[in-house]
Amino acid sequence: MVAVVGEPGSGKSTWLASVIRRVAKGHLDDRFPGMSLDVLGEQSRKRYERDRVLVAETVLPRATEPGPLLVSLRVRPRIRAMVIAFHDSADLANLEHVDGIVLAVEPEAAGDARLAEAVRGTHPRRRVSLAVVLTKLDTVWDMIDPGSPLVKPVPPRPGYVLSDGVDVHHETLAWLEHWNGTDLIGGVQAAFRRHRYFAVTALGDRADGRREPVAYRVEDPLLWLLAEFGAIPVLRGIS
Image (cartoon, rainbow, N blue to C red; front, side, top):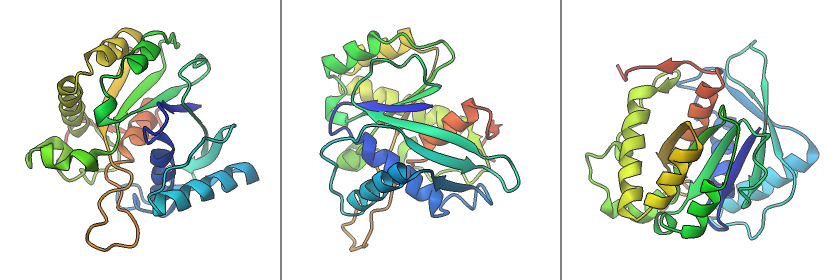
């Protein structure tokens, strides 16, 4: 079970719809041949279809529907599929039964005292893995150095590349500190032994006339969680 949490409008539902869409449409096939994803159940399919359309139109949903979004993810052909229940909510309470958490944070909201206090007040089991996801990276592209790890190509390796993940982690952490997110960072450090920072954009930049948005690095948090769950290998280096 994975909880996708964050303040209203933080991009959590958009991220979730975008990453499911990328995996389901085969965008990771070059790294994970045969990886497949199916949305399970009528309720999950209706909800995913609604969010998928909203992402394509770059319109954020006004409210999150209750209940988890269930998916069946098969990493390799003929390997048993794993069922993941994504709980999309603005509420950081009642996280004691989850295995992973994705916390969506907007650049301008990194220093939000309410979010920092909510994270500090969580008491998950020590084995819970937390992915802090800096969303809407496209809104601050002009601030990012061209040599930053955040804008380097994703390593085309069949697993979670540790060296790339660590570089992105530290760069994102530095930006959150720049945006006065020190309280949030302190709360994460105190509450979660296993955590990592990511920077993504689910909507991308459609200024060049593309009909659909091009997501950027949205799969990184999911791949890290899959590595934490033992579903994909951890690769030490890029080469």
